[in-house]
Length: 402
Length: 149
Image (cartoon, rainbow over all chains, first blue to last red; front, side, top):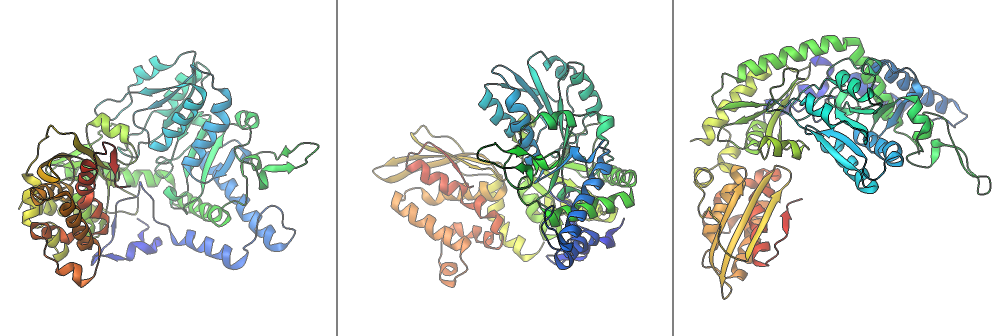
């Protein structure tokens, strides 16, 4: 649905219509986003927050309008809890260094899972190293679901934070965030949710989840690259020291009286922000809300079900990750064909998929695979495209077995 | 299948992928590990030298069809050559799969020529050269991990 809103979907690749199944890596951009960014640069390009002139007022207004849209998009209690950052990765690093690091003592523990993307592993490894703390890993079952009892058993008096993905980028597993948060909060342990792969696919309600931090990226929800969002509960953000110094995060600077920091959310937004990107993100959110996340989720589940059922008929096709609750991500293996060869051959049919470890090397190790191939669907994909994909997979097998 | 794919996945290449030659370990200090983090390819290369002549060379590991076949073809091409000759051959091979000049294209590299289809697939050059880089590390007795990144 809504394919006509995405100019890029009309292009050809290697003489075939583009079939874009790499949406978990980044999504395509609707005309509304392109126009909003173009208008900013053509009509009211200016720096935000300080200029006493018309263009700066307009730019500031548009930039702050997006913060209102973000608040509404994730149902945050207030706009000051919605920080603009560079990316989900940046958001997680911010929490690791400004929230976790000052609180961690030697011997303390942080809990993550075996499903995580490297961006929700390495920032914690770094902060654990700095503080002499330990990283604990929630195991998964063979379907790619978290082992909840083991998770509960990991929680103890030394646990300082849970950092967990909402949806696995490699397998599509949807984690039970409400239950995870409930168990953590019962022991007063805060929870960070990496929502990069969830935000494009479902309604996000940070108050219903009751998580302490929630991070997501603009470019995975049909907006531009280089901007993301960190939601944090006000009580934590107020207590945290700034992450970076300079620009908007400052109230006043003095060599004799000391420097004072700006109030939330500016306290965490050092330097000139990604203004055009924020405006593009605002347009992306408006676009998604206009369609409705419920409708998007319904459509994508239909596509996932169709792909799962149809690929099951293909000899040698093995889905990797068969959780009961899944977003529209289909990781797979094809007997006798390495994922990298699949990706190269499918590309010649105009089909874009991902192959590799999906920045989740510990997960690949757990699954005993060097790599998988991954098709990830958006609402703008079609059943006909899935048919083309399956036809190309069958040809790939045939071609390499000759 | 289009011509580029036919050129890339030639039957000789597919045969070396299905039945890699010299696919075993060797008890030798000249060995190295190669890793292509982009796609998860891993290769171990083993070399026995006798007075700078490559007496035996073998590999183990797992990877895509291009990297497996390239490793297999490399082991066949290198046996009996001197280390210097091997390095020269790699230079010619690398030029042939990356450069677009006629001189490089005209050079006859024997069986290695089945890999020249890689030229049309720049993202796969790393797959074709992983074993070669690893071989160089092995003869330099650098037991360190080699990566293509």
